[in-house]
Amino acid sequence: MSAIFRLANRQTALKFKTNFGLLSLVRPVTLKPQPAPKEEDLGHDARNMKLGRPQSPHLTIYAPQMTSMLSISHRATGMILTFYTIVLGTGAIILPDSIETYLNALEEYHVGGVVLSVGKFILAFPLTYHYWNGIRHLAWDIGLFLSLKEVYMTGFAMLGLAYGSAAVLSVI
Amino acid sequence: MALALILRNAPKIQAGAFQQNLIKSSSILMVRDLAPAHKQHSTLSKPSHSLIAPQKFSQVRLMSADHSKLWPMEKALSVSMIALVPAAIAMPNIVFDNLLAVASVIHFHWGLEAVVVDYARPIVVGNILPKLALGLLYLISATTLGGLIYFNINDIGIGKTIRKFWAIKE
Image (cartoon, rainbow over all chains, first blue to last red; front, side, top):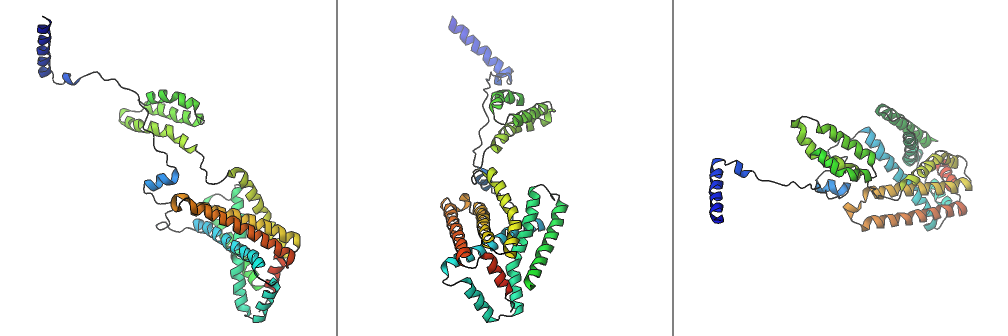
C-alpha cells in the first residue's frame, strides 16, 4: 500500500518537474555566516613587492624636483661631513705625527691660492649646506614654512646662504 | 548584507583598540547600506576592507627602537650644534672641541643609522647585512669618538686644526 503511494508520489513529482521546470530548482538553502578570508599580512614592503609595485619615489621615471633633490643632498652632505669626522678621528689614531706636521707640509708645497680657495670651497660647502638646510629642517619640525611655496622659498634662500657662505669661507 | 557584517563584527569592534576608527567606518557602512541598489555591490566588497584597514595601521613597525623619545633628543642635539659648530671654530678650546667631538659623532651615528635602516633593508639584502652594517657603524662611531677626544687632548684639537688649515693662504 505504502509502496503504491510512494510510487504515485514520484509520478506526480515527475509531472511537476516537467510542468514547472524552474520550480524544481528551488530548494532550501541555509546561509552560514562566514568571516571574510583573512588577507595574509606580509607587511608594507613585502606586500608591495608581491604586487610588483616600484618603490616610491620611482626614481628612474620620476622627474627630479627641487624638494626631493634638496632632501637627498642634505643626507649626502651629512655623509660627506661624517667622512671628514671619521678621517680626522681615525687619522689621529693611525698617523704617527701631529696634525701640525701635515699642515706645515701642505704649506711648504705652495699649492697656490686658487687651488687652496677651490679646495676650501669644496671642503666648506657640505658644511654650509648641511648647516643652513639643517636649520630649515628644524624649522619644519616646529611647524614653520610647511606650505609648498614656503618650502621652495626657503629652499632658494638656503641655497643662497649655503653657496654664499661657502664662497666667503673659501677666500678668507 | 553589510549590516549583517557589521552586526557580526560588533563584538570585535567593541573589543578593538581602535574603537573610534572602526565605529566611524561602520557608521559609514550603514549610510552606504541605504544607497541605491546599483551601488550596493561596492558595499559588499568594501566592508571587510574598511573593517580590516584600521587594524593594519595599528601594527607597530619595528624599523628601529622606540623613536618617540629619541626624536626630541636628536632635534635638541641638532639645535645645540647650530651654536656649537661656529663657536668651536671661532673660539677653539678643549671644552668646545670635546663637546663638538661628542655632538658630531652622536649626530652622524644617528644619521648613518637612518641610512642603514633605509637602504639596507632585510627584505632586499637579507638579515645578516643590516646587522653587520649597524655593528660596523658602532665600531666606526666609537673609534672616531675615541680618536677625536684623543686628538683634542694630545694634539691641537678640532677648532685649531680648522683654523690652522684655513690660515694657509698659498
